[in-house]
Amino acid sequence: MRALVAAAIGLVPVLLFVLLLSLVDLPPDGPTSPRPLLTADPGPKK
Amino acid sequence: MRRRASLVLLSLAVFLAAMAPTLRWYAFPRLAKIPPNQYQEVVLEARPATLLDYGTLKAREVEKITIIQTLKGNVEESKRIERDTDRDVVVWDTLSYVTGPDGRMVSKIPERYVFDAHSQDPVNVPGEMVDGDPVEREGIEYKWPFLTEKRDYLYFDAQTRTSAPIHYVGTRTFRGLEVYYYEQTVPWTEVPMPKTMPVEGITPEVIAGMGLSRWYTTKRMFWVEPVTGAPVNGEEIHKEELRGAKALTGTDTVTVFDGHVKMREDYIADTVELVSANRTTVLLLVSRLPWTFALLAPALLALALWLEARSRRPAPAAAPGKAPEAVTPPV
Image (cartoon, rainbow over all chains, first blue to last red; front, side, top):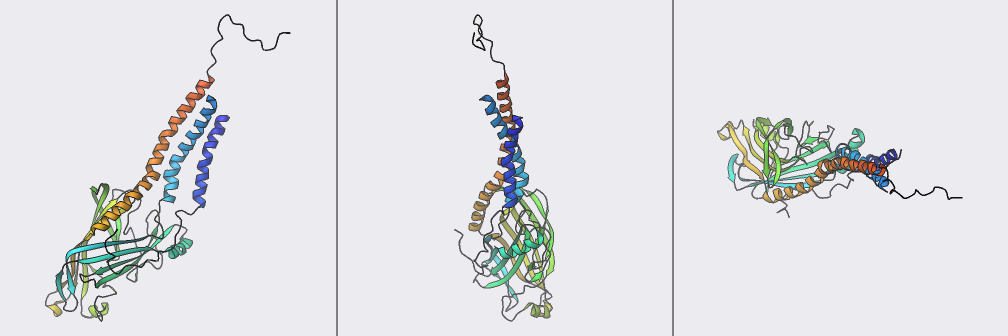
């Protein structure tokens, strides 16, 4: 019985993780970049 | 005490055994996604190149031409499409802007590319376009899916507006990264004129009115990092010509563009750095953590069983000659 309880305790965080992933929107949305589509060479990439 | 430790170890073993497949098959498709607000630019060059002078209708060799390719994630559009499609969608508005050696515009082709944020499958919705022409893409464009396979993929060609296989040629090492090398050759095909021409007054209609048609062929090469599916290098041997020009120039064909286009070195270095960092994150989710958990789980289970067995072993017999302690005090 105690072994079953221990196994169930081990499963709880996994179920919580699954629940979290199904509820939270990942990756979080940021706004559209304000930078324009380029019409000139932006120069050397730093 | 041993029994308690064995139960804790059992809990941990169950946690790790359940977490390993969860990370690989549940978390990975949900976490490994192209962000909808990505912004990225790449500069490619062809040195030297042959370019058509529209004023004289003669081809001339120039020192270089530059292709500035920008892609920008359109978050508002992706949210709008997600409401209808019930999947995570990325909308890229892209611009391929070609300039001559003097920095003046040679051509510009805008595109809208809509795809699934994880699988890279195209999502066919109204608004998808190349240079203003509605298209329905098949296959991939710009990027391969996560965990790229050693096989041919269908690749969308923006010039012909069609898809054709891009072939897996082999595995290579590029700047210390293991990459898959892909090649596609598009045979000479008649393609539409760009909507924006480099010379004012010359429009696609004017060109078509002269009886000219635009033809194109290319050999496209990509070096793709397979974990992220991101190309770390790209090249194209690209040729374009106008056909039916005999009445105007005396020859049937006039070269519009001929050059070997390569990613500029600073952008290769930057892309390799970015892809290497992303690769580590994806590998953690898809391979390193699941395998570590899968190996640790049976080890912890074995340890738990061993501790449990030891705790159940009978206590050693009492020393001879010593009377056992009375359970109840003598009366």
